[in-house]
Figure 1 (cartoon, one colour):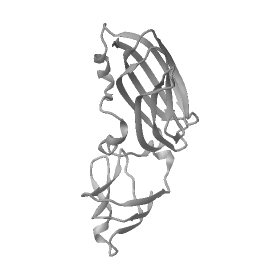
Figure 2 (cartoon, rainbow, N blue to C red):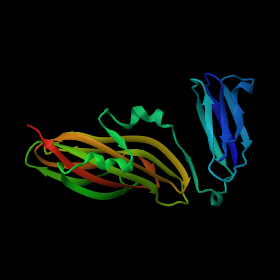
Figure 3 (cartoon, rainbow, N blue to C red):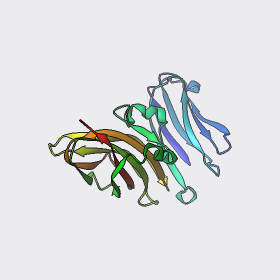
Figure 4 (tube, rainbow, N blue to C red):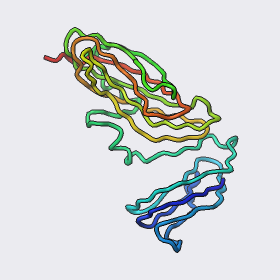
Length: 239
């Protein structure tokens, strides 16, 4: 695989490191070894080894802008090729408030018990062609606190083409045209070959009396399909 491009505006020393499946490291580029500080040009070839491997940017409180081009890739020999940000870089973007929980699939059942009434359950899929869409309506005879559980999974529509996925949001629309947010998940995924992402979320919100429509909003992407399994439980009535 050929790697070319540049890093600009480097505030401190940064390295690009290749790590193979045995955690053996190879330094691909090092800004400390270039004459022109603040910029790093790349034009090299990487021998990709069998197994899971990755490229890492390494630096201490370093900022920079980069533009990289990967070429001469034999897609038939690669099962997955993607770019992901670390979770701690996304903490400020995933949810708008601290009440939203991200769950392991095996843990979500502990949030339900016999005292909670299942109001609705549905499974629905959206693709990159869907900017938004209606999911389910809930009709309530009184103001009610509800718990929403969401199992979400994303995969390629066509494994022969690249995938990008920027996240999604869920919100209720009330009879009075108010919007009550349920989930706001933002990310920046890119992949070549097979891709699969799964996560579970839980949220408690207050819904007013009347019919409330749960709506899906896409934050963009291409060549992806997202499947949502959604369960809605009544927790208690609101005075």
